[in-house]
Image (cartoon, rainbow, N blue to C red):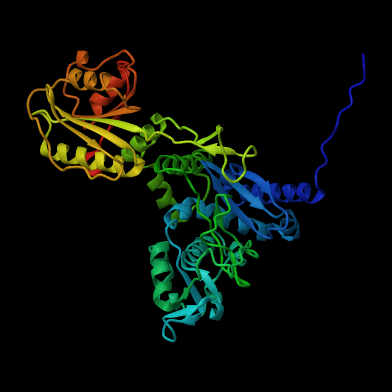
Length: 465
C-alpha cells in the first residue's frame, strides 16, 4: 500500500488566534444570560480581512458575514470584543441596513447649524453620514441597557458636541427610533456639500475603524474616505430587483428569529429589542409586485449582443462584434368581463403600465370578456391608454388562441383576471409561451396552482397598489 502524502493548508497564526478570541468572547455571553446574542453571532459566517482595521457585518443575499481584521481582534480584551460583536448584532436586529438604504446625507458634527446651514467637504471638521451616527447612537443606548461595560468603546453622546439629546429622559430613549435621532441630527448640524462621485478629487478608501454594516460589494456611492476625511460607512446590501431584496431581508430575519427560538427565553433582552423581534414574527405580506416583476424578467430570454460573426470595429479578430438583439415581446391579456370590478380594472391598468416601464419591452395587449374586445400594440416608449372595453361574459380560450396565432409569439403572456371561471377554462397543457396568471382572488390562485394548471399564479393585493 502506497503512502499517502497529505498537504496541510497553512493557517495564518493571527487568524487562528483571532478565531479563538472570537469564540471565547461569544461563549462568554452564555454565563451573563446573553445567549441570544451568542447564538446570533454564531450564525454569522466569519470572514477575516487583514488591514481593514475594523469589525463589521456584511450581508450577501441572505448570508450574514462577520468581517474582521485578525490583527485588530488579537489586540482587544474580551469585553471590548464582546462590545463590538453586540454592536453588529444590534444593527442586524434593528435592520439598519435596509431602513437607511436611501439615506445618503452627510453632516458636519463640528459645525452647528446655527453657524452654517451647509459647508463644503474641504472645510468640514467631522463629516459623517447622518444615518450612520443616528444608528450608532441607537445601538449605544441598547448597549447601555445590556451592560454599560460593553458600550465604552461604542460611539457615545459625549463624542458628539451640541447634540443635546440629554433633554430626553433615559426611559424615553427607547421610544426614539433611529429615524427620530437622524432628524434631530439634521436639525442640529450643517449639511456637507459632497462633490460628484465621479470627480477625480474624491478618493475612496476603507474606514479607518469602527463598526458598520454592508454587503461586501464595494459600493461607490458613499465612500469611506473623502479628501483625507473619514466618513463612517455602513454599507447597504445591493440586489438586482425588489424580489431578491425582500428574500434577502427575510433570510436575515429568519436567522435572527432562529436564534431567538433556540434561546428559549433564557436571555435578558431590553424592551426595545423584544419589540423588534415581535415585529419580525408578524406575518409579512407578499410583495406581489416584486414577485410578478421577477417572474416576468425570468420568462424573457436573455440574448447576447456579442458575436464572432461580426467584426469588432475597434479591435477586429480580437473582440466579438455587436449584433442587433430583438426587443422582447410581452403579451398581456386583461379580463374585462362583467365580474371584474372598476377597482380591479384600474389595478390591472396600473400593473400593466408598471411592467411596460420596468422591462422596456414591446407589448401586445388584448382586453377580453368572452371574445377579444380590444387590441393595443405598444413600443417601449409608447404610453398605455387608460380605457377598458368589454364587460360581457368570461372566457379565456379566445385570448390564448389569439397569442397562439400571432406571427411573432410573445416570450411570456401575463393574464390579469379575477379567476372567476371553471377548471376547464384554464389549460393544463403547456403552450408555446409561458403564462403568468395575476388574480385578485388569492384562494383561487392557490386552488388552480394546486390543481396543476399551466402557468404561475400570483395573487394581486388590491390593498397594496
